[in-house]
Length: 478
Ligand code: ADP
Ligand code: GLC
Image 1: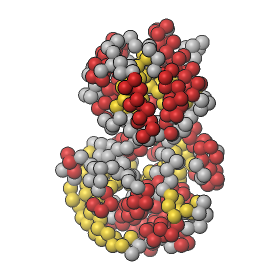
Image 2: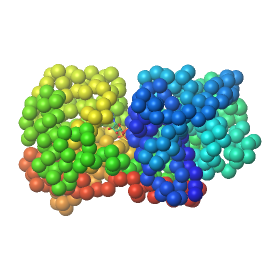
Image 3: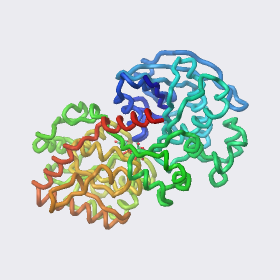
Image 4: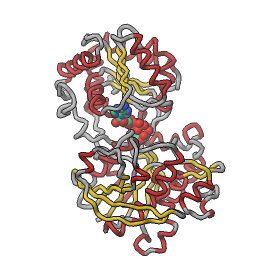
């Protein structure tokens, strides 16, 4: 039996801002329970819903040194779907409506969390063989582990894996402050360790000290070796390419299943979508106050509204996208300029544009179930889960060929009867528009072809099975 500990800053159903939470919340369920005991540790944010907090059991508490500070660490525990979750409590760090705040706060928050996650292990009676860290927020785990923890027998021999979900976010702050915050020695703050371009960098620390590195698709694993996608760390990624693996994300097929989904109005599957899916579209049109026309081509967007997701391309040609024969339904929050953009077009074209500028899991399920196509023209995309959700719900993805989008959406080829979606290569608004128009033409004028694209998409298997196996192989190899 191998003990594995996931350390992460978000996890469904407790707290979520993006796909990271989906992965951390679902992947642990899909390991072979006879061979791997996989547990998860996250912060006990005030923002976690009461219903979950009520189910947590208090385990223990202690006081931990963080440089010159002495901080309270409470440990809570809960079991869900056969997985044990631990929650670290400290209301000074983890209060507020959102898991993340200003970066200077987060820098201290996650130094605390990383050190506390290691420190609590003897108390919870779980000695991991491998600690599996996710994104910059957990970058200091491998660093601390190499540091003072080595004096304690309990920690010697524990291996670490660092998974990059998004290289854009690295946890960067000035060296002096980080030294003061973390209590780490000046020894660590050189360009071969935590320092990058004069500042301290949490993710870099994690990448330097982890035994293995993974990222969430094969293509992204290659892309980040190049300056364009490397976010300043491509040199390091190249140097460590021998221990870098790309493992594509899966989807929780229990939660995301149009045949059983409780949040959508009409259930359907690969056999019945031709008749049933359209009923969801009509229901959503009614709910959102769009013109009720089941034939109209409906494009969905569910996303963080940031530059990463390609919204400047949409901005550039939105007038053309919102043509009379199209409806656009957007769900997301993020940069103000994009929030305003969609609000404005919803005001201008109330019958065909719906701007839902908030976060709602239920609304997202309805959009995946109702739309004909799903637009995701990302500038870069480590994996992307939204396109997997779309494929599962018979909603045809329109994507840019980058990262996980390239690995999971096969472009439609009308001559060979192939493909599960539409894609374009260059980061160019008119290339995207051409692609949308092509999709629309197939939808309106070649309906049988369109339905065959859906057939092929719904037949794809992006459940966790295969990818969980790849993580198991990595755990065995390490
Ligand atoms: P990223 O992690 O980069 O944001 P992913 O495609 O991996 O992108 O995952 C995004 C996840 O967040 C999906 O599950 C998507 O449905 C969800 N999501 C994004 N914005 C919202 C929103 N406003 N309301 C509900 N779910 C959202
Ligand atoms: C990040 C990436 C996204 C990926 C998710 C889960 O948020 O932006 O592409 O799907 O992590 O790995």
